Image (cartoon, rainbow, N blue to C red; front, side, top):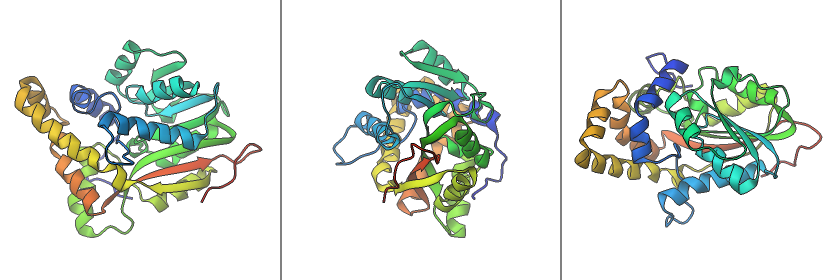
Length: 286
């Protein structure tokens, strides 16, 4: 597990997203996660929506399912799946700015709550499906993150986790100059490997249905972000002042580090499909 030299907690995570809210929405839009390219010809909007649809496919969602979006951001994933799959979604975010945006853009059967997932208050076995798209990285208690998902899901339900991962056995150079700083600058309390995630999921009671490394299909997200940030800096004085004058500003300047982390293999992007054993559990996939 990669742990930064500066302690991070839920308050720091919320502060990061609240401070950089205008930049996130201006540079990348309301989906605060990577895009997933299949052909390379997709637009960024198509790519981010493709990642959401991939999650929906792996969850095997059915109309009427009660779902949980852990670390829901602006609620865009919840809204997309509620509209396209006919499900009901309860989302959780630590950011007051993200929750306010979601409240200003309501959708039927979507409820976005300003609440820490680790204290979500949902009843046991109350959800048919759950997902976490790039939010597990921000969890201080990662075993607790998996344990809460297992508690809330009904037997036979699926849980999909899209995660930034550290390369297994990353060299000291990569840890010191890439992974450690990325954790510190992005307010990540820690960054795990594939093996560590699978061990935590199993310890919580999940079975591993499948794992897919899609690093090459998502990495262009950061080159697009770099170009957009450069353009915004040139034309928008207010955004430039905000980006360089906040406590979280260093994350904006760390985009080149993220690009290098992907290109060197120091950072991976994985999609885990997990299941809670039960009568309705599906067969394992290869």
